[in-house]
Length: 174
Image (spheres, rainbow, N blue to C red):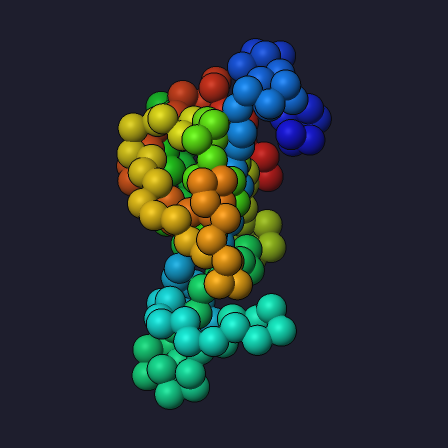
């Protein structure tokens, strides 16, 4: 909500911030991805076998064989945000998208790579994506540390060829 308050247009505040503040809608945050790069090679999330002290642990054999890791490190993000003809185009997949399972969720604050040529800590932007936009699909609920907090919890969300008019979103980080 703070991002909308600080950087949103008056129209965005009317459309999103007012209903968020009065509780009629919810938002979610999409950052964590099932694929990332660790030590310069691509990794994919494999079978989670244990959770200890709040840290997800994969079996070493599986990690070495499949290089399996999920990531919330922004420098590892693979999701893309591009601008073409006054539209944002968003592609990617997010895991543990906080709040996406709430039936009132109408807006995603999506973190993705908008400038792949920039320094690795300056490549990213956050954009507003309506959850009912074509190409947005909440695929499944995901537990956190073994707990299922449905129906308000975390989800896997796919963003496939999502187009948003640039005037309806903001691009933070450019």
